[in-house]
Length: 362
Image (cartoon, rainbow, N blue to C red; front, side):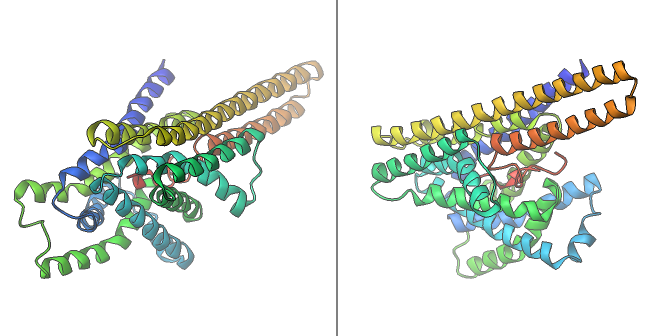
């Protein structure tokens, strides 16, 4: 019963996290007349004090000194902060320019881009179903290029920056909250300098559009941190395959918002492109779930065989060794499932469970 209760709590946290990420376009739309760069700067500025409050509440400072003594990891943090800043800024700009649906496409194809990076950069080997999914995704990009009359560069840049962000986070080895704090520390000074520059030119809206507007801008850090906190709660309670399924809630919500709330156009050729992407994701998810089931079945069979052999021979040591080997095989299968189930975000999940910091979303 306790396990079921934990899973229910994890699902609630997961729905809260991905639901918030999916609804972020509504929040960014409330910040008009502030431009995308000003909103981005405020998001970066207010994220640091938010992160400091969270870290103080959790008493999580042990990671700071080792990080400061490691120039390589510091460099990766700076690079990750730059990539996620580009990702955030483009998404905020997309909301302000009526391109929410095109932005959602970027987060839909992100798992496919991550798989492609795994092959090209990490020399990972794909299963046949994954190759087919990547091929369908490439076809979808071609269809969307015809549909938009241009390459869907916004979707591709959002997907590539987020996938690279996740790849870099593999080498940083920090959990979600610590990573959030480190990256926002890098972002803080450039954001503050830009806002001072904007104010000196009389172009800042923080102090000119009323208290409500100023409050909404200052809450941008909390809007960034809250989904991360809920995600961390979900990640420690749910299997990777479930998290992999939940991750599609955010771009699905963005797509519906673009269609219903922002009245963006969806001619038939764009529907065709999205249907291809969704087909690829369905295939990817099916393959991940099937692989997970087979891995668990192999683990159970190996453990049962080892136990039976041990009971017949009385060689408990040999049986324990075989069970241990089976456990390792199961772990490897689970890892592979995680990569297939949520290839775009796995590195960002907090290391208490880590995807790339899902704080990155939107």
